[in-house]
Image 1 (spheres, rainbow, N blue to C red):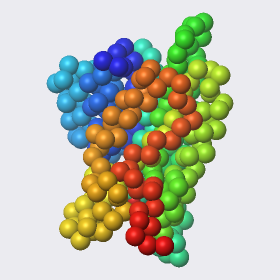
Image 2: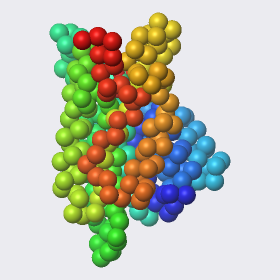
Image 3: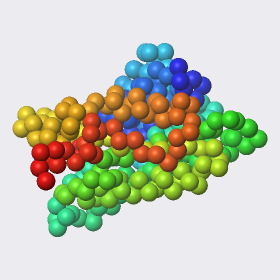
Length: 265
Ligand code: BGC
């Protein structure tokens, strides 16, 4: 088990990629905080699943875009498990619209959850990491932050500019804090998933025609599964990746390879 005796907070882990990461972390021996905002029932199911496999987990409600909520989530974590070693800043939403029709509310909602949410969670995590490491000398990272990004931190996405802008922001946010936290022995990395079969893109995978078109964008010719991302998250959270910081790992079946150019251009 690669994460034994470590405590991990996974934001937005009542479903999708976050859920798979919470479950995988539990299997690797971590104590897991399953964060949710509105889906309490689903979060409790994830907790149940982790416990059934012999792991330890609690569900904690917090809106990642609200400072007081985030602070309270970390306090609950420490009150329950005594410390916190890993943050997966995973919560993310889409609120799509053409640029001309996008409202300020749609823009702010996505930036708040996807970008400000990562700022608030990572800042709180780093404060706890630094305080609890005082006086400790270690020959590996004392703690780890994983930011969930997207291929749209690089691939422009018409009709989703709030989302693409938030993920582009995550890219530089992640790299800048990795630079600042490196000397403190805190590793910070990002995962950029491509099309992963989760509720966020149900409109794509629930339609045969949309799936057919999607395959033209994926050289590996299959949609990703949440577990594909969870395995990479386990690696980034574990000491196996101890010399990796400030990196973005694209988990996308080759979506970043400009597949449209394979027979054109
Ligand atoms: C989006 C999905 C989309 C994928 C590939 C993700 O970040 O949330 O809706 O299918 O990128 O375009």
